[in-house]
Length: 545
Image 1 (cartoon, rainbow, N blue to C red):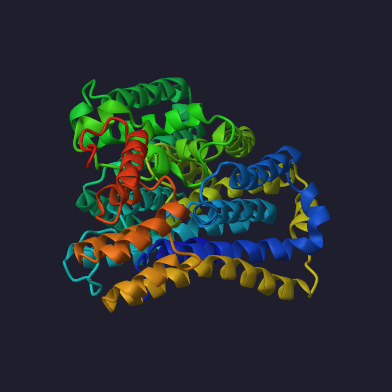
Image 2: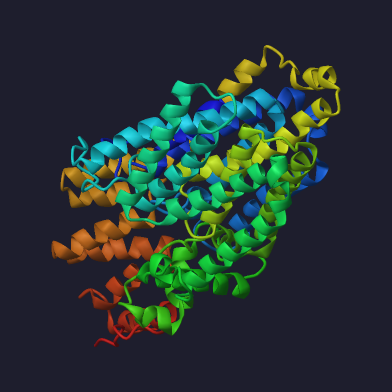
């Protein structure tokens, strides 16, 4: 299951059934398989506790418990916090599933399994690459992409990042000692094609993280070759200098600025700033899980409001660390960083034990670090993020799996790995999958039914679907917009009432309340005050009669 969850999450899409064809089906895969893995571990939970560091268990348990606490006390809409906002789905269910995937991956503790995990990432890149080439050629059979090479990930930035991560693994394996020649050629061709697609996306994310990963691979090469061993410190200094120049370039300073800096970087600074303000103004519980978008207008500041147009908004900080801290405060971020810290500690321990160049461990570690870098400039897109969580667990498990082998106690380690599950575990696994899939299929089904109503151009039916359990504020907003354009004031008024009742910080709802002919002067005055609270620097908000 763990070898399947990454490829399936990345590859599966539902363009013919869903309005959101990317994230909802991916969430079904992750939650279904994660709950199944959890159920399989239940019969051996006592031995499982002994197989991982106590601190890791505490951090993971705290991360999950704190999300449930935030769910109850933040005041954000419960359905939004549980399933996440439309097009993102980074709510409690998704993060709970990712934590379970990480723990299950760390518990496998088989060196062969972790090697296969690297292989699987490279293999997954092949169909993604082929589909992206079809899009580049303008032959996409699905009329959804405008021929942009986002493959199965919904956005060119996400496909760029995925190809960057996969290319690190492919490059390391291509030049691994004793690699078969025909595989070497295939891996080189795959890497070159991936980099070509990254170029076609116009997104620099893939190139940045690929170069960072290859830089780490270079250090392992220098470290393992005796003639180059003395260059370790100069190499690290050079790497630090490259990192510093890149950081300066993000601020439009230094020789790399013309290659790195762009208008979108400025926008990301606005998003990061708002995420940080959300964190420091709500340091304990945050603003609510996946609720960044509800607060962005209010906390983005005057500069961000007026940089382009006031309606340039976002529902994510474009930085996973800030998204986590904005969602659940510093405690949630700290728990996440502790989990990452255990992975880094594990990697350092392996590096101390292994001086020879181990291509699979190097690929695992370099790709993981590249993911952490990408997490600082992008979104937790499920199809990309799943690999980051898998590799985090893999580093922890790899260190434990090789600990006794390196000490010459291979037989003992083998017994540790070969723990047998009881026959009844199969039934538990099926039950676990059913629970996880059921929880995630609710928004999937609501979205699919909304698309049916949308295609039928039936406003009343759209409204009914938008109110359904599992639907989001986006569905109501879209229906409200359609009702206003159709000049159906009665329906628009009813939609506005439902929207503001469920999502009291919804900007469009209050905007509609201010301008609808059915609103009383008192309601218009209240709407004006709420709009000024929600978007204090927006000059387009005017008091109406």
